Image 1 (cartoon, rainbow, N blue to C red):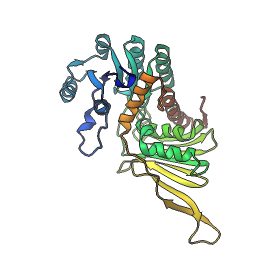
Image 2 (cartoon, one colour):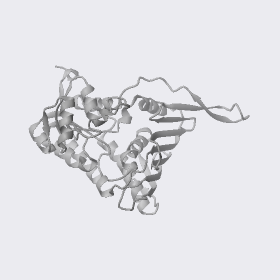
Image 3 (spheres, rainbow, N blue to C red):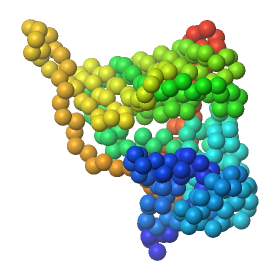
Length: 350
């Protein structure tokens, strides 16, 4: 049997929204969850799942025809040996589950939901445990795998918009309400904005420093409703981030401004504008929207799991590694640290 013909087994820890329940959303493109993506890949079979919520677990089992169901993930690891383990449990549990799974010797690859963890120390433990055990680790920043993001990255690398000077990223949402920082780890910047901080690295490489501001109208012990940051990139570009913002709508968009043009990518169709002689002002150049290059649409969730499978079978590193996930987290934590210090610049150490 060749590597590409190999049948793979999978198990899922966490059968909540991103685990599988968002598949019930009639308006979302499918698949849009860990289990949905795994079920859509030929040759992959989900054989076990764990979740402390009995009814949620039972519903998952019926939906995906899985009989080996456990209330404790440790029992799943003890009784099963699988190729793929997907961790869709709450963020505070990521480090414990990933390190125990990697050390068990019973999994070949782990797909962990974003953000990678609550702290950099936890992220380091996860990465080290997987490296030591030879277990592939992919972090679920699925936008990295989306066809239009891949095409946009190609355009940037080919110099179509020139040298990137500015990045403007917004992950806008409603007021999250009263939620403990200790319990959740962070607010809109932490849970949705992690995609933005990850894409900063995806398009422009590592960050160098951060200046942040955070607003917590529900008190200092609760998560923010808005986080703002200025990010200095090692490549010389500047980045601006806004997470939350108490909007009456959801919006996710990243704008990359280069010396020769502008790219916009996000949850809406991508746009490309290039520098052209002005049609209104003599001797000036202005932006003119042009057709975004063609690409074959794909599903980022499926592509993310396929990259994990490729790493398991061929050793080809994924483009969303544990170290990439750590870099995204470090920017977020630097925003919080800077805000706590009155907007003092915080240097990124790695």
